[in-house]
Length: 104
Picture 1: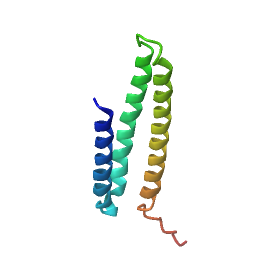
Picture 2: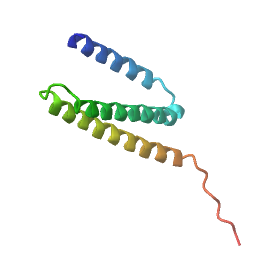
Picture 3: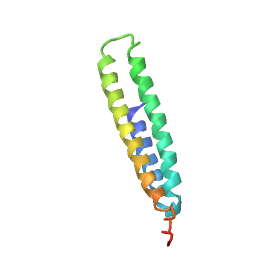
């Protein structure tokens, strides 16, 4: 596929995604973040598959490049998942009712 078409698709989807997220009410941000964490988990699996498939590549010229890019994708997606779950946990703690101290 033509790289210019891929760049245009990326730009259009980024703009549409931003406009959709901007209009989401703040009450739905926590479930939305949990969904994004799940998608980042899929990204991790895809990156692991790419790194694994580069071991079976026919030519060695793209072997190292595929492993490096796949490794960077694994690290970036893992940081995204861990950070996303950390932020989601902090947001959910805001909704926990605090226990009243019993008077004795």
